[in-house]
Amino acid sequence: MNVLVVGGGGREHAIIRKLRENKTVEKLYALPGNAGMSAESECVDIAATDIEGIVSFAVSHDIGFAVVAPDDPLVLGCADALRQAGISTFGPSARAAMIEGSKVFAKELMKKYGIPTAAFEVFDDMEKALAYVESAPLPTVIKADGLALGKGVVIARTREEARNALREMMERHKFGKSGDQVVIEEFLEGPEVSVLSFTDGETLVPMVSSMDHKRALDNDEGLNTGGMGTVAPNPYYTDAVARECMERIFLPTIRAMKAEGRPFAGCLYFGLMLTKDGPRVIEYNCRFGDPETQVVLPLMESDLLSVMRAVAEGTLDKTEVRFSRKHACCVIMASRGYPAAYEKGFPLTIGEDVRERVYVAGAKWKDGVLVTNGGRVLGCTAVADTLEDAIRDAYAITGQIHFENAFFRHDIGQRALKAKEI
Image (tube, rainbow, N blue to C red; front, top):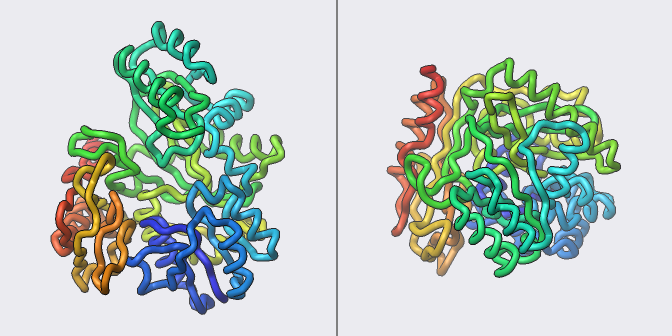
């Protein structure tokens, strides 16, 4: 079977490597992919948002199964278009992807169906939003409604920060049309947990939990990024918390989407905050998280392609989904300056004996040389029997990777280790 994966980052590299384990896969294509995954798939220079180009390629190359991984093409209807062309596809419809494509839609869905989340207000008028933040409790959270590369959220700790965030989003259009509406919500406190799940719209199977590290610098300082590292499982996500989340959040969300005529089939990501009053939803994503995927899939013992096909065919209830009880850690190596301005084009070397534990996010070939081509360049992932060993081994991998202007956090997993001591 020929399999196609839409996307070109570290998440897609992890998906491709896991799909490669299935012996029925004859040819793997990545659209557009990147240079780092070119040894494991054929990369084709078609943008992930070029829906017409993707469908044309899939039809002409006898694709038996497609995986649409990033948020943009899902919201644009890429999975729908592939299915309409007769190609079995993993990924939600555009109508279902709205759960990430619009934070206003997601918040109002939770309010309507009683799914626990932060209190919120919605604004499409900047002057009214500015007036509201003058008396809103601080800190307050301001979110652009639409997709913003994971950067459309500001935690404003002062009135001035809140005013600036609103002007950036609604007046200066920092995130384009995504900032035409904003959500202003209550600031929640507690440990954060990421839970990815497989669902075919009826059955939902959570994957192993994980802990992301969003800030660019050690000690959770610096700007918010797309993620500087992850560990799995998340020690705060106990069996009791998992049961509560299934009963109060996961299944109610799937039922709510079905009731709204937007049945969700694919990977539904739950971003959770474990508050003193119980778990709350911070955000939904309509796809695998990045870099959460780089620690979750290495712990998956079941065959990924079989599970994805079960999701696409509506037979998840008859399919085994099993994860190892080991631990995983991923350390992201980035270009200095990320997530703001950074340089790229530096030669990148990856030690031969660690290549199978590295997921490349931003690299390309230039005159036969592998060079950096993004803010987040790659992720170093290790799996071990203990979290301590996984963290140690992940950092050991960084020592065998070299490129100018490289930087990474030195404290990935430390919060998780402290949680285990409690």
